[in-house]
Image (tube, rainbow, N blue to C red; front, side, top):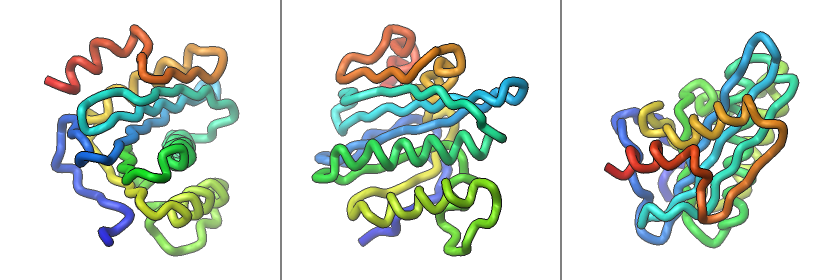
Length: 173
């Protein structure tokens, strides 16, 4: 089987997953003055169809890495909904991916979160993580930034919110 994580950053535009697979793009953002953060994720298939999108409002976030790891965990939790499909999770934080890849115990304040991600990844046979360029992660970034101004978690199935239309259009061009 292929490795569970990839660190290549050569792709600068969103690329479809292979036929029969899904791709979950995730991002986490941090607002330092308020300790708030946001997570955005979008699920798409090989025909560019949106299966779901979600934003999560975060409180008590300590730094950008904290928000990025929460985003990866959200993506891994979401991947379990499609356990019968190959799933590619992409985010633009090489640091977050590396913290999950390292086999060492993480003794930082983010150690439990890192371990949650490792456990979720190991428990799902056909889930793969990959770092992508920020330019290939625009929809998840828009959702995460929108979460900073939102009051609650929001989820859309098939029909994405209007504020994503321009970013979605750019992705498929």
